Length: 225
Image (cartoon, rainbow, N blue to C red; front, top):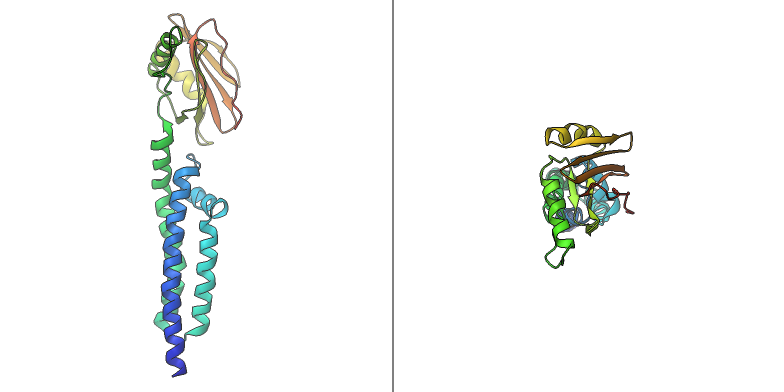
């Protein structure tokens, strides 16, 4: 009778561990889709989600419940099932990490800077359209958030890329290919001009800031995180 009671308790705890694991997976996905670092790979995103989000707490709870099951039940199938739950939890979280980061990119980032605002009056609206046309003439790399400034002084947007991407090297090639003349080039920024418009990219922590505006205006500066 005692053995049957231990087995029943272990089975109930298995269900609890599975429910906690499912909850942890859902929390991990939601956290990364909102707060994940889009330049992370799957493993980096998994570690970030476990350490910065609440899914790590869920994993700890799962491990505690699994440990209790292993102590309670001598049955092989229960012990193997219990051991498999945290493993499957981590594998599922790892598999869902790229999907969550792609969802964040789709919701919060652009592949080309977006400068035009519906409520802008003149002359800001004209300047925004000119900046937008300048950005669209160039092949970009990475993702742009929707923050930054746009108006008569030009348009700037933050560019996020992974650490191995050489931002300035990309624009050194992309600008001349699009008909832009590079007029200033050093270790921190590249500036070019074409048809009265200027384009500038400046390296910043985590990526860069790109700017387009009148060739006589000043370029971008790194934005505070």
